[in-house]
Each structure stands twice: as structure tokens, then as C-alpha cells.
Image 1 (tube, helix red, strand yellow):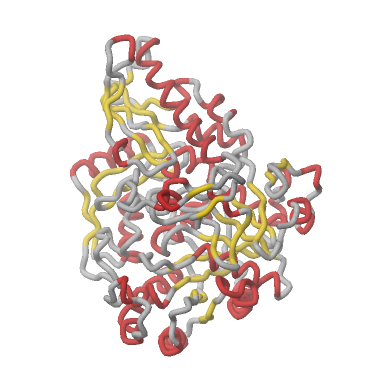
Image 2: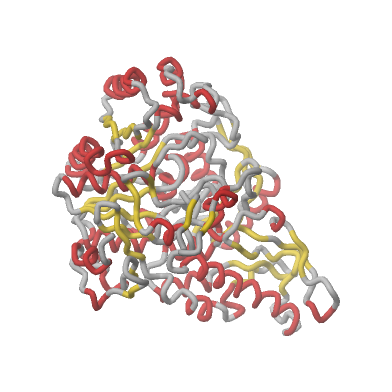
Amino acid sequence: MRPIGEIAAKLGVAADDLHMYGKYIAKLPLKLIDEGVIRKKKLVLVTAITPTPAGEGKTTTSIGLTEGLNRIGVKTTVVIREPSLGPVFGIKGGAAGGGYSQVLPMEDINLHFTGDLAAVEKAHNLLSALVDNHLQSKNNVLNLDPRKIVWKRVIDMNERALRDIIIGMGGPKQGVPRQTGFDITAASEIMAALCLARDLEDLKGKFGNILVGFTYDDEPVYARDFKAQGAMAALMKYAIMPNLVQTIEGNPAIIHGGPFANIAQGTNTLIATKMGLSLSDYVVTEAGFASELGAEKFLNIKCQYGRLNPNASVVVATIRALKYHGGVKLADLAHDNPEAVEKGIVNLDKHIENMKYFNLNPVVAINKFASDSAAEVEVVRSHCQQLGVKVALCEGWAKGGEGAIELAEMVRDAAESCDTCFRPLYDFSWGIEKKLDTIATKLYGADHVEYTVKAKTQIKLFEKLGLDKLPVCVAKTQKSLSDDQYKLGRPKDFTVKIREFEIAAGAGFLIPIAGTIMRMPGLPSLPSAENIDIDNEGNISGLF
């Protein structure tokens, strides 16, 4: 690794402007963002086909593409999200890429990093503590109904036992007993607000607008009613600053924010993206999971709020994942099976179609695995060529930037031919049901959307509160285009069921809950944590 000052110098950032976190990590001050030059730069979004246990490698491809673009003379920074400890110790692993397409130092990035997620957690739980303290010691002068408090607590860990809990037990001095629960930190509205904020003042305003609950008379109660936003924002003094690290080939990487795309907006911070666009000619960024989740939220929510205009998009696919969508069992994915690739390619087709809804013509990146046969790769190449879609074999994992040059050249050509081609799928002024119907029918491929009585009642409440003009951030399984995780490939003839809504008034969106998705994951039967260890010299093993 190179000293972080050398990496900053590539971006034209002086050493005195860096807030150092050791030799290889630094934070960048917000004053470096230049709104005047951002629109002159190129923004590339990397998304993927529907995730499978076989893996797709969006982050690896994003980093490899960045290495490739720099190799062909395009000054490029990769801007991605921070890992959550939940997946690191659970089933998914870290989020620093892999092979020769990694960001470094990998161990530090995956474990605590600069403490941003800890700051999010503390700011969130500070508000939780102030709410319960108000019930206990201020005689509830706000008339807050404990049964109607919607603000939970968070922890950066997969812990299913904390989903639904009772607090305040033990007598009058221990608090007011009530039902509540924990979400994972990545699902916190504090994280969502951080990722959409312009600066500390804007973030403080978003914190003040957080809906905590309702009074006995069904009137809303906000965080500002507890005078919480100032202290909460104070905890975010350094967390709001993007983190600068490096790729394995010594190119700049900015890592900041970490919401999941199945339960939040699934993209890095607006601040980090604008920082990258201010300091380099191209920014490569990725959105969580597939096109109907992270990409949809990036394009409809983040780009509309931040007035961003992406110039190109990449859809990542793997031969293994396509075979899985074609009905092959996980244990058999290494076996040559062009017929299964042909069968599963309908999933890729839908994600290509989805990007075209935003007026973006995607480049398909085949993320190469050693087990992929030439015949299987040719199935994808010829199919994309028949569709008139550019396709490149990406070997970034094995070869770094050298293995991503073909992809880099195609992405550069696509970006240079698109200045203002992007268009969002919906307008914020549309009604809630129209927004959801548009997303579900176009991007998921559903016949229609069905709402429970509870969801319908909530929609009427949002209209009364003036929240119906906010964008929608659907919480849905990432394992299928539908809201049923077992429907692989390209499902048809299905209904999306919205069971209820959550409100993120501070962040600035509504959260429709589709199907059985939960905002607090559980650990698998064999968690990754069991394989992680450290020796007496501080060398960590088993982390990936």
C-alpha cells in the first residue's frame, strides 16, 4: 500500500486538507466538493442481475472497472459503500471487493473502519434514549402514546432475538414498559439521512424531521420536539466526511455510508459521490443488489434529490448465477452447462430492460469465474449481441485492471455518448400508489400491487400529513424480482403485496414493506464469524 497522502495527491488534494486515520486512511473535508464542475464529469452506475448464493461481484467489478479506466488514461475514482458487521460476521462476507480488484486496507475497511457506523448507531440510540427518558422523567408533556412509538433502536449485528422486545421492565424507576425492537444499523433512518444530506446543517434538519411516533390524539411527534437534532448531529461531526483509501493498483477509492438496498436506498452517500465527481473525471459507483432494488433507488431517489445525471450503466452477470436462475443446484454450478445458461438468461434480459426504462443503455459485464467454459460465455455474448447490447468479459478478480480493459473501453464509449440521457421513472409529485404501481409493473414485472387494510389506512394518513409526495423506497427480498424469494429467473403473472409502510420523514422517503422482508437479519447456521481469527501479532485470518 502507498501512503494515503500519495493517493490524495492524485486527486489534487493537499496533505493539510486530510484528516488522517493512520498511514492508509483519511477523511476528506466537505469544502472540497465543487458543485460547479460536477455536471461536467461522468458518473457510471454498476448494478447486477438478481443475486444468488453463487455470487455476482458488483463491488469487485466496480473496482476492476476503475482500474481498467485508469489504465486507458481516464482519471477515475471508485465510490462505494461501507461494510456492515452484520454481513461480515454473517453469510455475505465483507464489501471490499476480491482478488486483484480490492480496496485496501481490507481488514480495517471491513472491521469498524473509521467508526462511521458506530456514530450512526449512537446518534440513533441517543434519540431512542431521549424518547424513553421523556416518558419517564418529563411526565410525557408531549402526550406521546407509548403504543404508537415507531422509533426503534439499532445495532450493527445480525441478531434475530432483538427484532421484537419489551423494555422498561423492573418497576417504576426502570422506565415505562412498552413493546419495541431493534433494526440493523444499515437500516437506520440516520444512515439513510446521512446518505442523502448535503452538509451538517442539512443533516441536522433531517434529524429534526424524524417521525418518532404519535400522540394519544394521533398527532405526529418529531425528533425536534425532543430537541434531539443538535446532539445527534454533533455525533456525526466526522462521520459525515467521506473516507479516502486506495485500490490494489494504487487508484483512489472513496468509501462512505452503508445502507442495504433491500430495506433502504442501498447507495453510498450523496456527499461521497459529489466528492468523487469534484476530484476526478469519472466516478464508478455501485448500488446494492439488482436493478429493481439498489439501481432503482439510486436513480429515482438519490439522483433526483442530488440532481445527478448518470452517463452509463453496467449490469454484472456471472455464468454461475445464470445457471442457478436456469434451475441448476448450487453444488452443480461448476459443471459445464450452456443449456442452463440459456434458460437462466431471461433474468439478465429483465435487468437490461430495467436500465432502459431510465433511458440508459447498459453494458453487460460477465464477471469471470475459473469454472466458466468458453461455450457458456459464448451463450451470453451472442445473446447480448442479438439484443444490440454491448457485452464484455471482465477478469478483474484474476487480473486487476488488465482484465477489465475491454469493459472500460465500452463504458467510456457509452459515457462519452451520453450527457443528459438519464430520466427517472417517476416524479415525486405522483401519488403513492401510482409510484408503487409503476415500479412494480415495470421493474419487477408484476401484474399489479395489492395493499392490506393497514397499508391503505397508512396511505390516507400520509396524505393527511403531507408526506404523500415523498419518493418510495421499497423493502423487498433481494432474491427475486418478485416479493417471493423462491421465484427465480423472470417471474410472471404475480402480485406484489404491500403489507405496511414505515416512515422515513427525516431522510425523505416512505418505506413500503413488501412480502415478508425484515429489517433485522439473523445469523446463518454456520456464520462467517466462526472462521475469523487473529494471532498475537495482530494478523487477521478468515476475513473475506
